[in-house]
Image 1 (cartoon, rainbow, N blue to C red):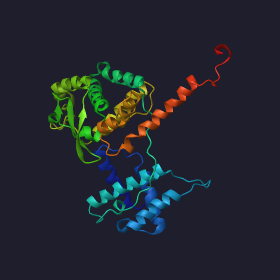
Image 2: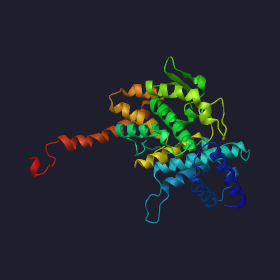
Image 3: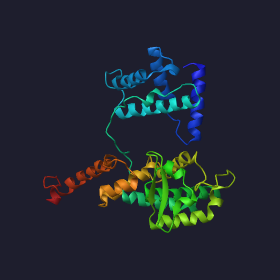
Image 4: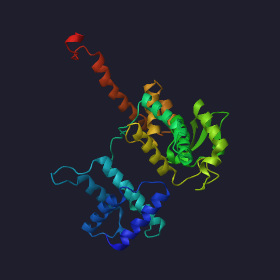
Length: 316
């Protein structure tokens, strides 16, 4: 990549940081794309739809030194989605007229869940751990953990996405009905999130003292419930990761709460169509991914009850 391209990528990374998005793999994914453009002698500003489609085909068919397929379909989809967002950035800067990735046929792959979905017991331990914010070393740390505690209880009750939480205002909460108004960032629709009794109590207390929590030396947007619409996601995920590691639970981020709601309610016997409505899925197939996790429990059932399982001499 030349100097101008590197400067452009730096600007893109700054924009991502401002919106609370990770920049961890930016250089890697964009380098894949620009290497392809150089190989095919294509200027990024004049990329056509056919050439964008060919880039995806290139990723799907690319092989490593051992002759094996280098990228799985899920990885290919992630790279293409990322380059698509890069071209949206280019369009906003008026460096291109249209985004060719808006018109390509995307590769299909089976939806999957993150591996680290905490079971009900571990989730309860994790939430109780966050609840003990008063154990923080100093006032700033206690304030940080308290805010994380409130958001976590809200997300685990409603199954809301972090992008929906970022937009919440105080007036979006209806305590009489126990609901809050969510602007669904994915489907561009408005839906209601259901607050359980505990999350309502937590939110009421937070609202009474929120100015002391979020409008300190760093300032904050008074109109927003949690004071930020830009860096809240990055901040929250960092805190959740730190606290999860303390308990030995490994990787955990804000979206795990949403998955946990679907998974735990299914295990509890909730009808899948109710779960679909709670999570705001337009298609039932999106909700059905939680049944894949549920099937993993069958291994424990087989091991426990099947007559041909080896139990040792003392158990015979």
